[in-house]
Image (cartoon, rainbow, N blue to C red):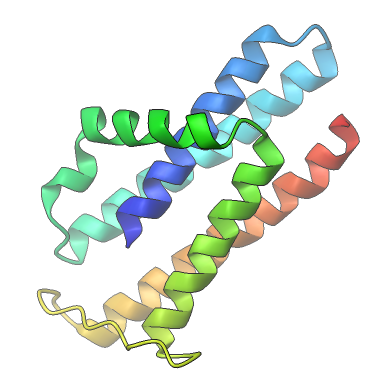
Length: 143
């Protein structure tokens, strides 16, 4: 669940780094750099919350994350499309955690307090989705 979001964000971060380094426009260079900083912090937040909630330590495995991100970047080469996909995946997880849309309610077995963990994850993912929405707003000027 959180690994998927972490991998999507890692792919997004790598695409932004690529665009940041290869653009001929200084304003775009600065925009991509700014967006990278926020995404890097979000990846860190996801992994810390996941580990605190009892997730397996492989969520912190850099090699796995980068390999999954590489697969994602073969499917998504447009930053806005990847931002939108990330938001869609976040919404799916939030719906599952809330037991909405006839989704089977996710049980977080090995956490210190299931309700607190769910609330923390939902809040974190909501924050990340909002940031990605703001990114899309900023990127609309890039076209």
